[in-house]
Image (cartoon, rainbow, N blue to C red; front, top):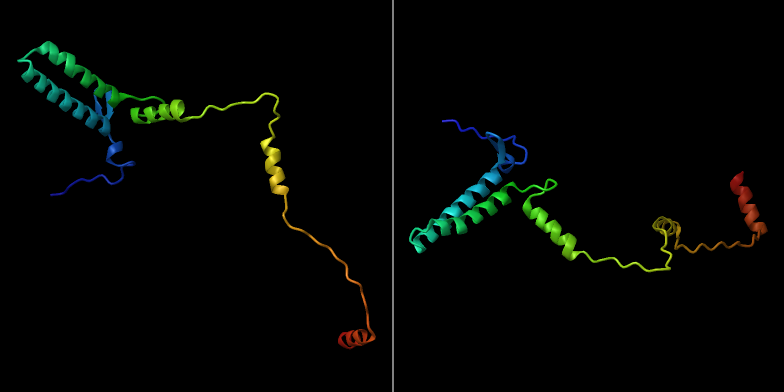
Length: 147
């Protein structure tokens, strides 16, 4: 028996999607919906047993759980899922420090500061000139080497 295993799926199994008539649902969304239905039915079963079959209370408790699951599964905002969106909102509104600006303060240009740092050299260049003293012996040696 041959088993078909798709190896060339970019992104793996979690990036696959299923077309259900008007809606295209990814595998992750389908799993979230399955968990939501399971959780809704588990809560509904517990409520039905506790209240001896009161269906109004079942709707009041179980249906909001299912709606929250559907909202989580289908939430998209600027190509972000709900977890990424909530993390971005927390970073933006709670973790950012507000910038304080001062009046009558000339702010240095960052380009000129970067250029000044690039041009700065820490090398101490010392130029010294030695006196030229030519002895007769040195000149004779040079003449012998040059001939």
